[in-house]
Image 1 (cartoon, helix red, strand yellow):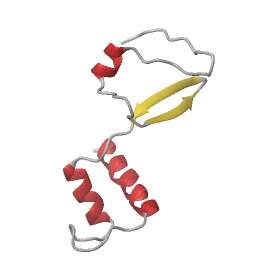
Image 2: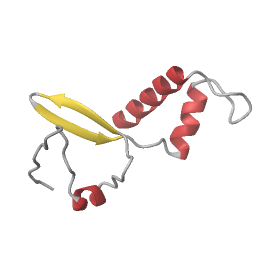
Image 3: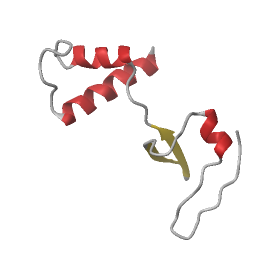
Length: 89
């Protein structure tokens, strides 16, 4: 989909409903914002899938639900590594 948006007074934009429906963006969906050569790239941040979560727990060295989770920073780091591995596959 290609569309044109306007930036409002408080530097806000409104994403068109068809776009949100197409890629399943709902109110409260966290978004990653990246600038790329003078452009802005918005990407929804999704919760890990069940298999991705299991990979994360294995990579963190934790059995499934037997020990308390690691630090938030370690979990975020492992999520990024697992997702990066999935993009290369």
